[in-house]
Image 1 (cartoon, protein in one colour):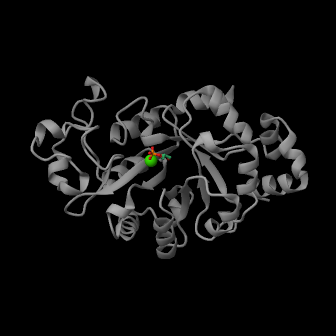
Image 2 (cartoon, rainbow, N blue to C red; image 1 turned 60 degrees about the vertical axis):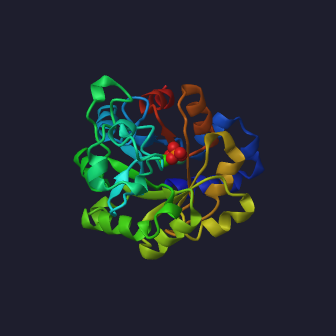
Image 3 (cartoon, rainbow, N blue to C red; image 1 turned 180 degrees about the vertical axis):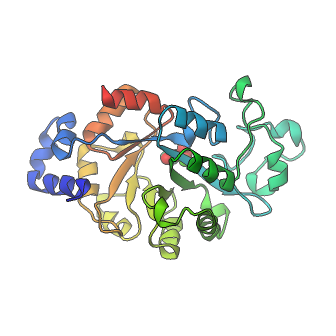
Length: 289
Ligand code: G3P
Ligand code: CA
């Protein structure tokens, strides 16, 4: 039996008794497997977020999973950046002073390629670039890592779901050998429905904390419910696990953004499947300790 299925069955058998156990005991009762550690924006405490340098650093820290944020340029290139503006994480104000508010969608890929996306973080990273999604998946592949790809602000970029899937297909990320190495997540349920409809084999994750009454709807198109760690509890995680997702497995929970050992141990005790963190080293050490 799949570990998560066993966990769900155990939870069902234990019923409310499981909810009365101390949080740390509940996970041990479930299956004893520590949550997967996912380097948020590539591990943004250690390197400039969403850059190839961050992917490299995550690999050096032993992070198998990296999370990123995908948006689209004026001329249709998919790039990896968190904010809808280039202002916070690049030198765009100096390079293009007359172009406020410096939205990603208003710059071409060639213009964005000129920007320094590393100096704001530290001199050691001067010259780091905003990667294209193509460059990014190549680097993730190079390190044999796995990718939690977020479609960021998809409402700003009509058609980004199809374009992202096309790029992933072209780069081999929808092939059998990449199965289990990709999850597409978003705060937009509509975007995830589109991804699921276009490529039903691709696993998806909804960012948020849907009400228990709505979980059955999400289970028709998403494999994961990924809430802020401030909103989760043992009861919520158990309730999510009780649903079967579109690929016939219990829904999973990856929670964000957990940056302390104490919080990591606490959410692990809730029974989460994944922990998304800026500090993969801290979380890994907390869980192994
Ligand atoms: O993966 C969860 C997290 O990335 C969602 O929040 O704003 O960092 O993209 P944000
Ligand atoms: Ca993100």
